[in-house]
Image (cartoon, rainbow, N blue to C red):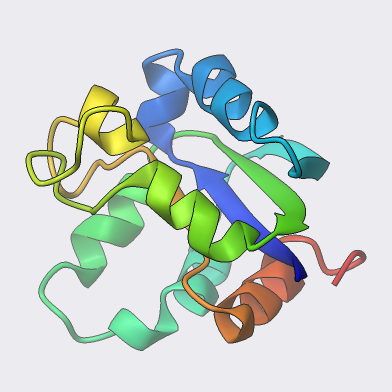
Amino acid sequence: MTQRTLVLLKPDAVRRSLVGEIIGRIERKADWRITALELRALDRPILEQHYQEHVGRPFYEPLVEFMASGPVVALVVEGERVIEGVRALAGPTDPIAAAPGSIRGDYGVIVRENLIHASDSEESAERELKIFFPGRA
């Protein structure tokens, strides 16, 4: 089943010059296509909308601050089972728990700065795509 998902390459991926490596991994998957890509700074209103389910949790403010600390690369990726697939490619949030070969397993350092965001369900993808690519949702 063809799906669309939002992928964000976080400020640490941009700062560490890993954008090309991560995009290359996505592009090498046989049936996935990047249909939109944009380098952008995220302001607080966008971040509050994106992370609304985390408001009040102890990691919320540090996460918003981190995501606003530098530019991100936002992508729309389409393909067969792409939501599940990109999350598997990213690996678990904790880079120590992430398997070698996953993005976080190969390049992750700390939990908070974990290089990549990928929508976790079709509902999340639809909601997040409307936030980051309103003209394409």
